[in-house]
Length: 327
Image 1 (tube, rainbow, N blue to C red):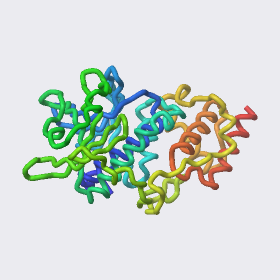
Image 2: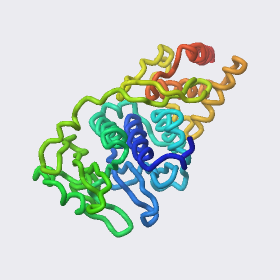
Image 3: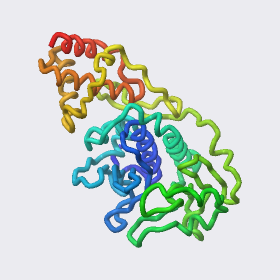
Image 4: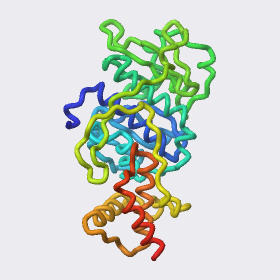
């Protein structure tokens, strides 16, 4: 399925799923923001720091991802997410844009990840494919400030108004996201508000949105048929919040080795080339750093991509370890 065939609702859903996966990996201390660069030409679900520095933008009016301050971007992210897997897509974005990763990020961002997953679920299922999540702080072509047309529809708790701004130049409303449906009169009808800082969810009358916090059911998710060879996708039912794999004993040999620091942007292509060479003729390069990078790359996949590595990949991992020890 090509990007151009996706509906705006599908892209909205995918943007929140991909962002939840990025938050499991990203080493930066970040906040979620809605940005409209290019004079409002783009609609980007973004990650920013408190300064604010733009760390990542996922363009929902197009097909690209970019990091702030860099001219480089990658395209085709929505097609990749819908035909492979949102975790693999997040991993690909991080690798290609050379964004720093940290194994502790999933723990640090745990609550924000849960909120992103719930927003994604509401966009696709709770709103019956009609909803959109909108930040209550507008930062667009006509200036920046609270989204009065959204906030005026809801009784706002006074405690929310006392929260510190997530990033410089904003205020508490940048922490609030409105779950909206299209409406002829209002334009955007607010179904409920979500506090990205506290996790609270309220209905327009200010009461608790109890439904929001109910356990998420299993959903149909697209995963690759064969991760090693990159085969065609298939649909399978998995828990919405899938457990991380345990990995294999081979990864313990890496200790504190960080492939991003050694190879930078070349980590993914070099590691993939090493894997392809081994699966084709069972040979490996002799340079130890390249071998370690290939094992490191596999370890990142094992941690951040559902169901990977499979049993068929263990011989490759063991061959890498043997070659590293021999070197």
